[in-house]
Image 1 (cartoon, rainbow, N blue to C red):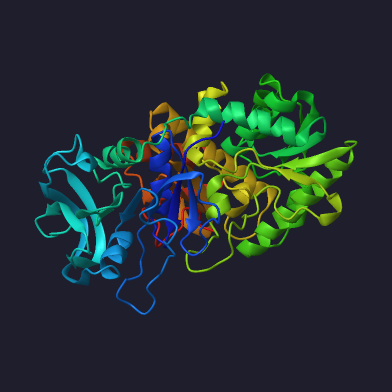
Image 2: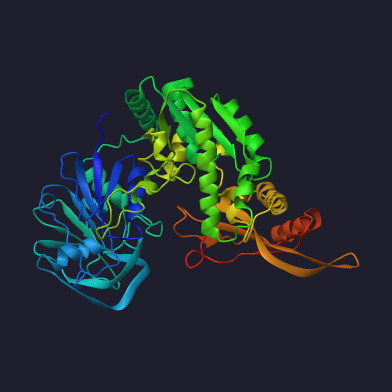
Length: 511
């Protein structure tokens, strides 16, 4: 089935991925391409959206897209930088704003009877993020909306299906942003809303069968959402020709290897569990530097995976749980490599001599879509709702060198923390949580004796995609009980702290 597509031209905005996700929430397929790498064939795209940008249209570094095959020929929505670009280079005027227009604002005027603002009322909240402002509309521009501080908050161009807005409809702070996108894409551009999890499953299964045929496929499972959904999709397409390998690197959560392996087998997957804990711990012995630890873990995984893959006969394909942000993450809006795929943290860098062809059933969809597809496939909601867990596991949550005793200690701490979040009904309100074992000993008192033991840091963040994150304001009573449980039950720990840093400037993980 051929879906109507929306082309999103990326000018480097931090919100570009959000635009794509909001469009897809309307069951419309969207793709992101750099503004200077517009697809040669535009026939399949029914509408185009120009993103925002950190650049200024007035600067020497203004980004100039070639809109000759788009403008006036296809419905186009220009957001923020896009709106200013159309004004500045088409007979209007853009000037520095007297005050930086950033944050919440309200539409004080909306043109009556305008389809673009159907079902949206004056006073609706929008989100601004720009330091320039449109002083004069471009040639043919018609004012559609204003705020108290921004006269030209929205306009259209006569004789074209071209609309432009200075605010961001894609962020949650724009209350009617989804309605606005629906007005433009469905009511004005006439796009069909047929991109659904069900249709994705059906089409992907057919595509896998056509691509792989009767060949055997090997997949490295991690226990995470992406690789699990990829496995179930592949299993639906090719059944027992899918061979899954689940490696215990000794850095998983407490009892995770056994419980996840049982879960996979219960799902009917053809999976082999390989306990390589000692091999990984030996490879990590004495290494303290974070990047060297990651490389040691990655190399050990490649060796183990390669050993197991060679035990299988006539495997032609390697499956990966690559998702859409992995595909576009390293695409630079200012001329970087196009669609460079980030190595998947479990199978990235497999040696050339394996000579396997790649199949990536999830490479077109975002993480939230992966979960929706997983639900359509009937995967256990508890598994789909799992927090992200880093590929190197507890290896990057133990700061400094790694030993079996430190792993045991952190597994116990992590188990108490995560179990507590679930018992208190907090787990699903947190995007990611974990504990860090710090290379710090501190003085404590237990009974009548002084102790000199380890300090652990607890971390819980809320986020939509991990690019930005804020610490979660967990109840004091919960933190108090969790701290007491950890110190009383985990031998070697006498101090617990809670990390209240946001990303940026801090990262979610400590290494």
